[in-house]
Image (cartoon, rainbow over all chains, first blue to last red):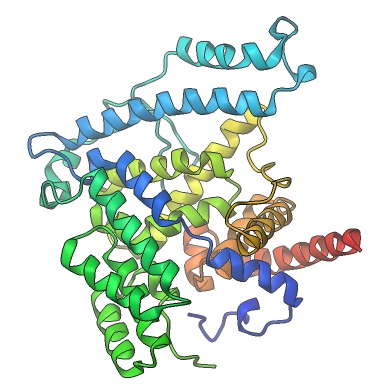
Length: 243
Length: 164
């Protein structure tokens, strides 16, 4: 939404070359795919669905340790990708062969805290990286909302199955919206408390629109708005043009 | 936490991409964002909306990541300008090419201007929200947007000229 004081966006008719606006339009649609989201969900499973007895601090520590390991691997991969003989120590040749080891061992020798997360503040204060004990307040465990997650409602396999089904639905939208709608109904039956419910609704609304069932599409979009008023999917729900 | 992830995970990924995080690093950096959210969520006081708070975290994590990458002499945004044909076909190739072109264009902007432009033109925030997220006065945010647009347009026209 643009407030009256805001300048017109490039997407709303402000002067910008069509090709540039096209790039930005593509960027607006360039969110994570279902598969990418499913992978991220799997990585975050310890904090999204902790076991009832696991403290959130333990879950964060476990993930952070995994993150450190991932960073080591990532560092190695990046070193491989960007390895340049001129930028490397003289002893590192051949760069590609030794870079991963060099990066990994350097990082491993650092007294890296278990938690290596950036501190976050909206105040603009400098980022401070600290160690685990003083960065996980006791209140986290007490106030965490994680306990309310439905236990066992999503395994990584379930998430992958959801993503796969919705990917089929999304693919069918253009050529066969009836099938796309049917697949979303199948998703609703198989995964009534699924991870990708919002994605399903976006596809279903679009399918209804393409089938000419506009009143149903609008009713469903209204239910979506009521249920997820702050959803980032608001931008992708298929609505009649208001321009 | 699950609800936060469900509602925003997909778009955190998008924002990080346009804030200069390389595709190969998006899973790790997105994970870092949600770890931070998880840790900070109990401290969220509702003085801003959850979405603006979350994007402020994105900015911090992305900035911190870029700084670490700089220290390690990496080039986090120097990614895939030269990709071969994608098995997804012509449409997918076009999308990837556009992604790479925009990535290169955004890379010419200073990070403070880039953040404002991405939040306003791609993520759809109001300028008041943008100012809140980047933690600057509203007029400063307007100035940054104006400068970012001018610089992006200049880079775009230069890029178009080079193609012809």
